[in-house]
Structure formats: structure tokens, C-alpha cells
Image 1: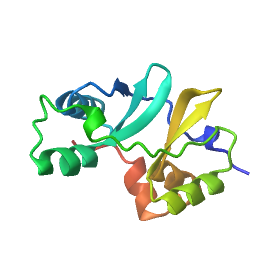
Image 2: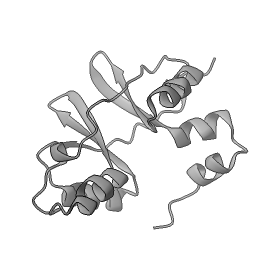
Image 3: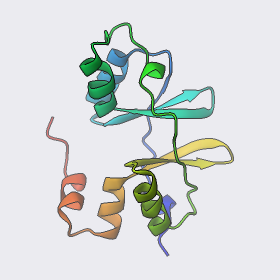
Length: 138
């Protein structure tokens, strides 16, 4: 059995829900990532992706310099433990229609597993794994 902890990402960026869409987009750009985890102290309250900023923010004519992450956040997050089976994590993603799962241990965020991470681990010859393993082109 392969566990989530064996391939989860530990390079995490967290932001406060009161941070702006622009600040989040700049973090994503500067770190070549597609999401930030929104926290309130040590508690994970949601995730904001680059797509959320585009579809829920910009497309709705929100001002990215004054609009806050907590206005576009995905609150209904599904989490896993680092000892959970990778197949079970994939099943959770499928069931809930999510592409990222925060990894929580003892109530604290310790990692993140993405659909791309799972593809690289479970199906290394797949197109998604190939794309996910490659360096960002931006």
C-alpha cells in the first residue's frame, strides 16, 4: 500500500482569508503553484486556486486589489491523513470532485496531495503524470 505521505507536497503556501486576490495570484505566480491554502491561525478553512480567482473573482467583475480570498474560497474541503492509502485519496477526489486534498495531522496542515501527484505516483506513464512532473512553463 502506498500512503499519501510518501508523495504529498510539503511545499505549502498558506494565506489568510483577508488577503487579496492579487496577493494570492502573485504568490502563485512567484512560486509556480496553482493554489493557496487559506488558514485561520492553524486551522485550514479552505483552498483558493488560480481558477477560483479567474472564475469566481475576475469573471464576476470583482476588484482583485480589494476583494478578499474569503469571498471566493472553496469552504467544503476534504482532507486526508498522511497514512491514508493513495487509492482511497483518489477515490475521495473522484467522489467529491476535487483536485487537491490538504493533508492534516493532529489538526495541523502538513502537506497537500493533488490529482497530478496521484497521477505521477499511480500512473507514471500517463499524459497527466507527464505534464504534472514537468517544470512549469511560465
